[in-house]
Amino acid sequence: MKHLILLLTTVIISLPIHAQLLIAPTRLVLNADQSVTEKIIVENSSDKPIRLEIKPVYRPITLRGVTRTDQSIAQTEDIAEWIKVSPPVIRELKPNQRRTIRLRFSALPADKGNGEYRAYLWFSPITLAQGQTTDSQSTGPSFNLDFRVNSYIPVYAQRGEIKQDVSFQCESGELRIQNKGKYQFNAMLNTKSLQEKLVLLRQSELVRSLPAKTKVLITQDEQSLHECTL
Figure (cartoon, one colour):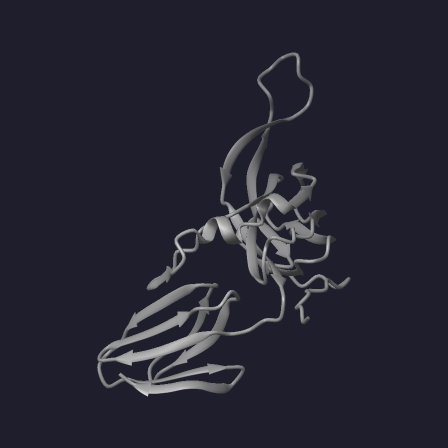
């Protein structure tokens, strides 16, 4: 059985989710058969303190031209209930301050078959605008809630050997890719004027309109998977 497991190192490599918050890592891929605790680093990159809420959620994916071929896929792939985070709330994260969030993932039950499952960690920072209080009985500073921009990072759990089951169809002015498998499919769409990363989750279909007579090349890890002319 082959699993892809993301290992976290002591070196923090973070990407800006937005102006307020840095999160590392920005993606987790876990073994569905193993309970594990992972660490996530959050850093306030703004010049004001923030309050941060974190919780696991499931989100449907909406991408241009992509539909899910299984109407009950949300019930199938949602693993939010097997994820716990601690702490769920950081009441104050000062500018440039870092904190560690612990994600506890419980192994999936045996009745979930081979395939890829997913959820997201939802991060909701609220800027705290510091100012003098108007309450004469209070001697400390007061904080007023300002704004929030929610962010998400995906958490995937994989069970079984990863197998691809993908079909390609080229018609006049239309490219159709169907991922019939239970694992996501990643590839590059290449034309003379376009290079685009394709991500199709399990049991999904992509339909993309392109100019007639366009030469299309689908590659994965620099290897050609499919070539056609629309």
